[in-house]
Length: 417
Image (tube, rainbow, N blue to C red):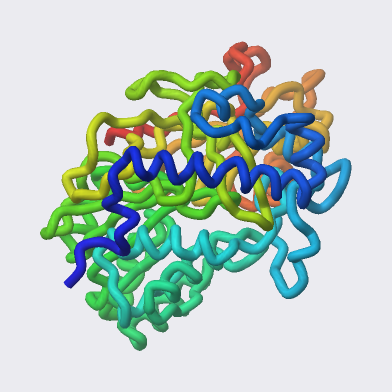
């Protein structure tokens, strides 16, 4: 049985670097012709000169707020996609909002690598509980599992009882979805007397896999590995494991992506080991994104993985460089909190606090009233769900009690527990 998805994963690191930067100038030249928004953003650069990390670092970092502004001005893609290639493809809308074209075949291979590293093999059946609605997550993982040769049940989100019934009947060996929904399924199965012991492996993303939750899954017979993915690039990095399924430290960067770690708020690369913002350049000719700032924090780890893959490793997801926060696999943006305040003039200030409730994400909107009026908690709760597509509690606090620290989203989850 082969140990790696393909030979690219064990290339000499210098050969990998030479290949990436050997391809980059030609890719940039074509991308600038096909994507007028990218041309406008990068100005009169000479693609032939972008042959090293130092040369790439001289280009500006495109942050999602700027991409959203381009898209608002010139919908749907702001000139950053080759729209001549969109016929027959899907268009997605992720929170932000940010429009994205359907992932291409390269991004399917990105996902397939992560499935393979998680011990999943052709002929496994995958229960995919990522959303197939609006956002590309479900399709990204679906395409990767099928590219590997797996059979996929497109479960999507919600309808827990129906998902449990389906899994009990189909007996899939693999769960794919957010880290906490597997526990929801397993607990519901225990309550209802359904057998989900067919699940032996899982590939999760869209939220933090807390050590306590991974340990609980192991105790229930499920070996769980995680991957780090974005809508724009698919799976950027993924965990690997030893022969017993125990995860190795860090996450291996995927092939055919250039990943930099930069000082937050700048485009300046930091030294390996220093925490900074993850910035990615991909080679998707339909959606050519150059130095896109993800807003996520991580750091490059020294050495290569004990699994033998020679790609650089990152420490995994370490929080947000900005205040955009992922809750139950969905991003919540400070602009959404501002929209809530705009909708409710009885609110003077608001702060969205993200915590953990057992092994699930939870959020509470804390609000100060304006002019002594009493905000309607039920109406605020309805607006919170309408704007963020997520439910949460409402807490009305005394005027002046919210911290004056500039935060409208506070992530108070303990990622070491």
